[in-house]
Length: 513
Image (cartoon, rainbow, N blue to C red; front, side, top):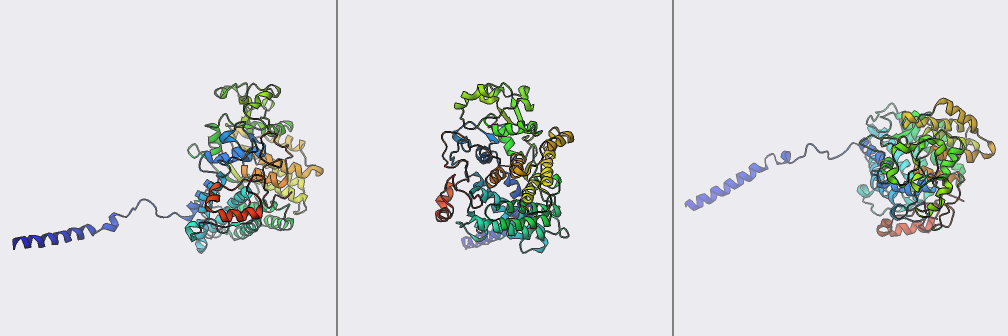
C-alpha cells in the first residue's frame, strides 16, 4: 500500500513540475531585444548602401573592367586583376555586379515596394523605393543586357527561384514608366521618412532625383528609340530636375564606414592601379583644374614601398598616365620613353582627395544632368541653348570637387578661366559634351561604361594589348555568371537566343551601331 501511495505521489509531483515549468514559458523564451522585422525605410537604406558595394573585393568589377574599358584607371597586372586592361574574360570579376545587386540591392528594394504598396501612410517610402529600384535595375541591365526584371527579387515573396529574363527594351520602358509614376506621386504633404539616408526625408529632393534619373534613362535610348527618348526627356524637364550640387544623390562615408574603392586602393591594391594615359593626357592638354584633385604621382618610385608621402606630388606638370596595352613585363620597354623609372612611378588616383576613406560616392549629379540636357538641346528636344547647359554642367562638376575635401576646392578664378577656354563648339558639340561627361563621371564605373557605349565618346583608341579576346574595339557587356548557367539554364539560353552569345562582344539593346 505504501509503494502504491509513493507511486501516486510521484506522478502528481511530476505533473505539478511540468505544469509549473510551462507557466511563463512564452514570456521567458521571447527575445525582446533582437528585432523580428525592420521598418521598410531602414531596408531601403540598406539597399542604397549596398548599391555602392558591401566590401572592397566587390569593387573589382569596376576596377578591372569599367574603369579600364573607358581608359581612366588601369592595371598592368593579370591573373585576378585581368579584365578591361587585357580585353579578356575574367570569370571572377564579371559577375560581381550581378551577385551584389541581386543578393542585396534588388532583394531589399523589391521587399520594400511589396511591403508598402498597399499602405497609404507609407506612400512616400513606396515611391522612393520605386525610384531606387529603377536606378538599380538600370545598372544591372546596362551591364548585362537582358536580365530577370519582372520576376526578380520574388524568391521570398512568391517563391520564384528561377526568374525569366526580360528583354532590355521591355525593362527600359517599364523603368521609364516607374520613374514617371513614382516621381509624380511623391507628395511633400504626406509623412516624410526622416530616417532616409540620402535626403533625410526631403521629398522634393527625391522627386528631383526621380526626374533626373528619368532624363538619364531616356537618353540611353537615343540610338534605338529617339521618339520615346524625347517624350521622357520632356516629362523629366517638366517634372523638375536637379538645380544644384545640393541635390546630388550621394552616399557619404566615415572613418568607420569606408568608401570601398578608396579602401581597396589604399590597402591591398595600393601599388596595382594607375590613372590611364588617355585620361591624364586629356586633362593635361586642356589645363583642367581637376587634374591635381584626381591625381597623385610618387615621383621616382622604383617599387611599391617607395610610394611614400614624401615624394607624392599632385603638380599637373609631373603627372604621367600609364599607357594602354602593356602588362607588368612589357611595360618596362616604354618606361624611358614615358619619363618614368618604373611602373610604380606612373600617376595614380589621389588618396588624399577623391579617394580618401571617407570620400563620398555619387549616384546621379547636377553636373551629369546638365550635360545630358546639353545633348538633348543639341537634338532639339528641350528649350534653351546647348552652350548654356554645357557650361552649367562643367561648372557644377568643377564646384563638386569641394565635396571631396576642402583642399580639393577649385577657385572661382580657375573655374572661369577653364570655362572661357573651353566654349561649346557647334561642330563638335556631342563629342565635347560627352567627353566632359566622361570626366564628370570619374569613379562612377557603371555610368562611365554605359554612356561611353551609348554616345561613342570620348573618341578613345582601341586598347592595343596583343592578347585581346574581343572582336570589336571595346568590350560591350559583361557575360552572365556561371552560377546562372548552373541554376537557371533555360532562361539564360532564352536570353542568349534573343540577345546574342554570352560573351564580351554582344551589344545590349540600346547599344546600336
